[in-house]
Structures are given as C-alpha cells and as structure tokens.
Length: 217
Image (tube, rainbow, N blue to C red; front, top):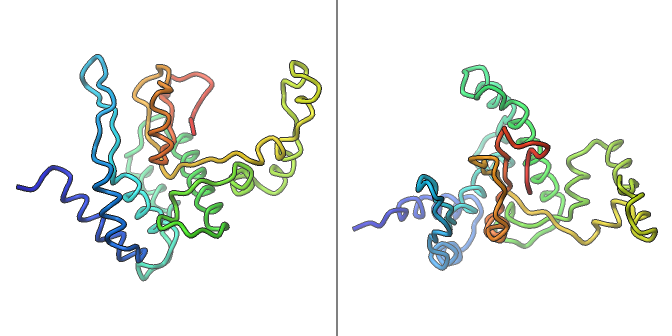
C-alpha cells in the first residue's frame, strides 16, 4: 500500500529530474534520508510544526518555472499572474503590501543567485551573501546609500563599532530562503526551530497583527 506522501515524492522526483538533469539517485537519497518529522504540536492541537523533505524540491521546481524557458516558453509572467489574482478577488483585504513585498524579495533572491556561479544541484536552494542580496533588491542609488551607511544607533555603540559601514559589517554573512511561510499568530517565534527554517529555505511572513516586523528571514 502506498504511504502518504509517496505520490508527491514521485511527482517531484520526476519533474525536477527532467528540468534540471539532477541524478535520480541524488534526489531519492535527499527525499528518503530526511523523513517527515513532527517537531511540535501546539497546545490547541490544531497546528503541527513539521519539516517536509520534499519542500525544497517543490520550491526548486517553482523557481525554475518562474525564471527559465526550459518548459518551452518565456519565463513566467509573475506580475500578470498576480494582477489576475487580485482582480479575481482571491487576495484577502490588507494583504497587498505583504504579497508585493514577498514577491519582490523572492525575485531579488533569484536574481542574486543567477548572478553567482554555483555547482549546487538545486540552484535556488543555496545561501547568498547579504550584500549581494541587497544589491539585487535595491536600486543602484539606494544600494549605494545603504552600503556606505553606519548603524542608526551609533551613539549607543563603542567607537570602534559605530563606524562600521553596512557593506563591511555584513561582508561575511549570508541569507537563505526560497519561499515564505505565513505565521498563524503574533506570538514570538521559538528559536529552537530556526535551524529547520534555515535548512528548508523558509522565510516567515509575520501575522498582520504583528507590530513593527513584517517578515523574518
């Protein structure tokens, strides 16, 4: 009898093999060596925090479809699709800014990755230098200003720390995400699960009632 999830694994395995040329044994090993694990069940027993091994594979396929013509057509018309999504009333009230922000940030990540040589079998699941990400995200004018900026709270820092430029401070740091997951409430994020988010390339879109913070990468 087929176990739950095996059909999805088979579909993803087939799609990504054809689109990327990845070795089938490599994909199967990635899937089967990381079985589904339940990390935590919320007190209300409604939500399970879990890791799904096929998640990076599914998002890799989505990234390829968005950014390449390997399917015999032009890269996906993302903004046209989003416009239809809004026009047909499928977007909840107040979600416009979040939708645009998440889309722009994902496209910036894809652009930064495309500009870097990589031997990774899953191209869009790699980490990127913070500076390269912001360079792709911002206009030339805004990136020039950011890279030369100093901490806003420099008056509260030691002298040697207050003069660090943004570009120098983050020269050896990386960002890694390929898709977003939405927080179900405005409670604090449990840091015990951050490693799972990093491994799966998940950025968090905060709950609308969350003050001050919109996304967490």
